[in-house]
Structure formats: structure tokens, C-alpha cells
Image (tube, rainbow, N blue to C red; front, side, top):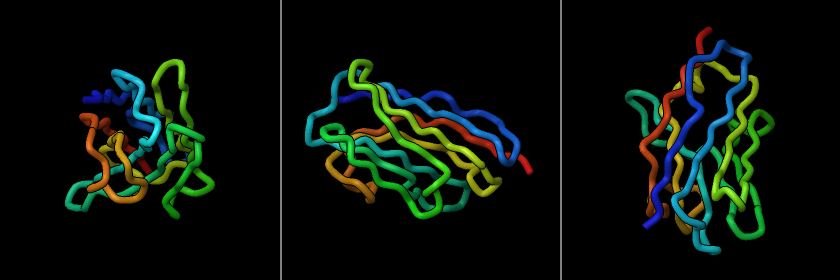
Length: 121
């Protein structure tokens, strides 16, 4: 079992930046990907970005390309999501996940508790 703890959420003005962190209780399996998803009130959970733990390949939702960077620190078992040029529509609870999938939440077996990101206009 991998436990995930997110941090770094908060309130930011439109155009600002935030860096989210996700600390894993142990090193994820080499076949795992670490993903970020978000869920706004009344909406379905959607993919934001993912990184393969082994090799470091990265994947982004179209809405976040060019505005976000996902990275990992192997020594700390931590994944980061740097988000820039934030928009009010980025407001959501952001979840970290670990699993064998990339784009689909159903392929992630482990989830954090979520961290709130609020972007004011």
C-alpha cells in the first residue's frame, strides 16, 4: 500500500503560480505512474498531468500544456506539479494518485486526500 500526501494548495490570483507536492510513503513500483487529477464542484474528476516513475516520461492534459510542469524527486519519493498562469477555471481539489495508468482515474490504485486550489479573478 502506498500512502500519498498532497500539499501546496491555496488561494492565488489569476495569473499566479502554485507548486503542489505529493509525498509517497514509499518508493512507487517502477511500473507505476504518478498522476495529478482535479475535481471542481459538480464536475467529474479530470486528468491534469502524469509522470512515469521509471524513465520520467511526462503527460499533460491539453488544458495544462504550457502552463504546468510535473516532476519527481526520486530521493524524496515526491512528485511536484508546478502550475503557472493560473485561471479561475483551474479552481478545484487536486488529487495525487499512483498506479499503472496515465490518463484514466480508474487505472490508479492509490489516492491522496486532495488539496484545494482556488484561483480568484
